[in-house]
Image (cartoon, rainbow, N blue to C red; front, side, top):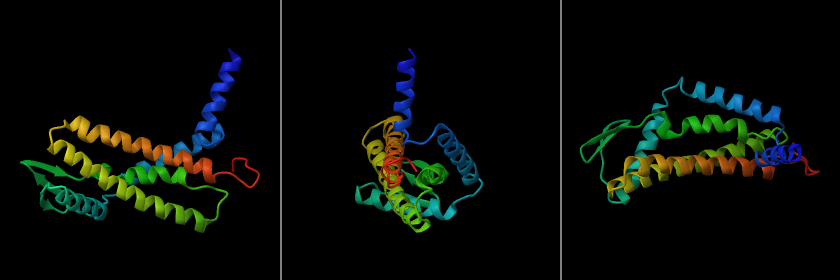
Length: 176
């Protein structure tokens, strides 16, 4: 029994990028705090930008929405308001604790963060438009929106783990 337990925790630690249990817990707490801080802001500019890109991509897919306000649009008689979760600002803030690799330079971390920011924005707009397209063609909201969102969250987490395994090593191959 002890061997199975040890191998399980060894595999689990390897799975989360080689962080020690304390470091992983610390990063989770920092992520939770960052998300809490994220929700203290309105993110109006990002809600507008996300909705604008989403509506333009939807138009390319043949879905023509009517913008009502900077963060609200209507389609087929339904009104949708873009909230913080629609922007994935909360995901971005929470991911900061996992993107930043302590052993790397500030410039390298900032470059990674910039790439992550643009990739996350693109993934999010694609997610929203795919959801809109699926719902417009008969999929339920649960499948078209929630399942697609869950898949995106999973992909983001997998990228964060890959990033840690790939770049969170020092020259000797040990976790930084």
